[in-house]
Length: 129
Length: 209
Image (cartoon, rainbow over all chains, first blue to last red):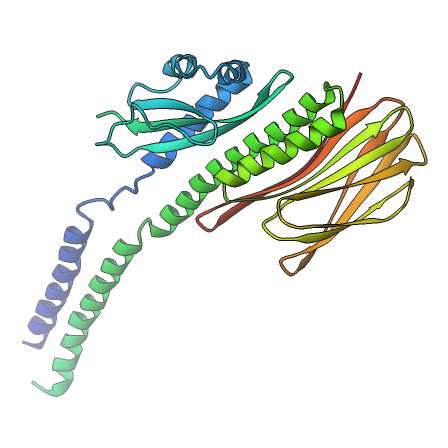
């Protein structure tokens, strides 16, 4: 009788533990959202690549946002939408979707060749669904 | 059945409950620390990229200034202008020291730009130079200048010392004085974002051909 009770209680204890193991670990822990950071990093690396290639300063000097966007089109993934603004004191927000979480990346350009003309290139980035 | 038997049985159940509670706590902690660390890692990566961008642009300004008719004047105007622009858009603290070496008379002209969000008093002690000591009191977003004469054609060790936020900051950088004029800049740039701080100090010198 004693042994029977011990065994029963041990079985209950083991069932409790395994039951808990099953219910707690049946789904993996929620994956943290690094997508925003990755998109921001990707945007920064893309604009830096344009600068290293020697194209960015020329476009910024000409205030040619279209040229910057065309160049970034082939660098950034299709799953990321973007809009470029070449800013002086302020940046315009035309063309940015209102129903998306938008990330902004700023890249400074102090001039082109022997011309001092400080500007900021701002890329607005969002995930395309 | 005595009390001993009941107590021993209950210990199994109690132990099982403790194990289950531990499993629940572990589940909650799984990934928290690595998530927090990775998040900080990502943020600091981006801030370091921004810092690298600014560092490159300050160097570009030294380069642009070197081709102007009055390199000294241009350098200081551009550095002030750019520092104000950055300060207006970024949480930043910047100190720059520009140096124009005149190759024809071995004089060099030093301008300090304080964009550290507080006033400072900078002591300057260069080697192989007269005078061997100078001081500039600068409020925030102000510049000050001094003229030195190098006693040699060679390397000048230039030390700046100032008190800032309760600490004594001392930096030494080297630049060359020769029969060729040059522009140079020492930059101390800090960026802040959500409790994170990144900083760089560097010197860039460009000879004027």
